[in-house]
Image 1: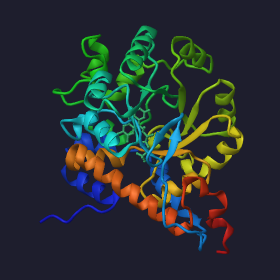
Image 2 (image 1 turned 90 degrees about the vertical axis):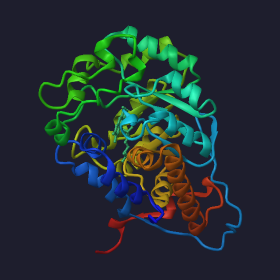
Image 3 (image 1 turned 60 degrees about the vertical axis):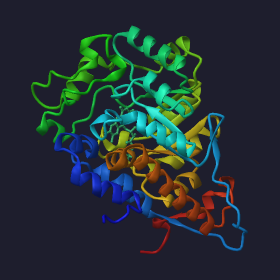
Length: 368
Ligand code: FNR
């Protein structure tokens, strides 16, 4: 009998063995030399825990809120595109797992399941819609309208993607969506935006983005978005205190400190390393979340200690989906929940409010 999967890395190892090359390379890659890809994970290890003792951790409360919604623990699912390459149930299964675990799910604009399929397949999940703004603003208007109708609670506007980063393996593979799959949010709307059939050279996704996404976006476009919806807006892809302040000035409800899973600009810092400057700049004027490299319950704890309200996971969910659809993603989330509970208890925290910056030391503060 196969050994049970007991940690996030086990799901990754499994997926690496079974996913077809085109999909695996698309899921695992970072941009260029992938130095930020490694650093997103490694940086967590440079932050050391400073646990407190004798603080009654007999009963733990892992729950928190995001944008006023209660979640059972502070790990949510990030938007990752094209999940039906991992499993036939795709994003619907991932949403069902998030629903079962009482946490939030984010649907990508370029998903292989539609907004409506999520609403139908996981009607009780707290769901956010990740938005790319297309040159054709009517497409954006329609997507936003559909997100509202389908019960999505927020829009996560991705701001780090005027163009896609250069992912070498995708270029070598001439990555494209397998022909039996479609970008489901565009099906029936317009052929150009629902398929990705035109990769002549390099990655089909880069061609898709370059022809359809709007690279002229500025801070003014936040006003455009606010003018067409009352949904809270979260900016995904903030990496500096300067932009965090502009985001607050623009009136957003939240910021996701994210480098897009190291898939955009290589050699930017690991997200956990820039979280403190962003939290300090925001001064509680909006919620701050983090994604990138979260693989352990202690990573979640560290992000919260540095001021994040919650974290999002990207690749781990794809690998768990590959392993066993909705059940796989649920098991993965359970493992992260248990690890986070253990990190809290062993650090002397009975509730997430007890997690404090003084419970972390950066390794540079220790003598070499
Ligand atoms: C992504 N990410 C992403 N982000 C986004 O805003 N829209 C999208 O469609 C996608 N698609 C996507 C596909 C794949 C395969 C990956 C790995 C990532 C980025 C994602 O939301 C998140 O920022 C990172 O995945 C977080 O890093 P980890 O958890 O993968 O290390």
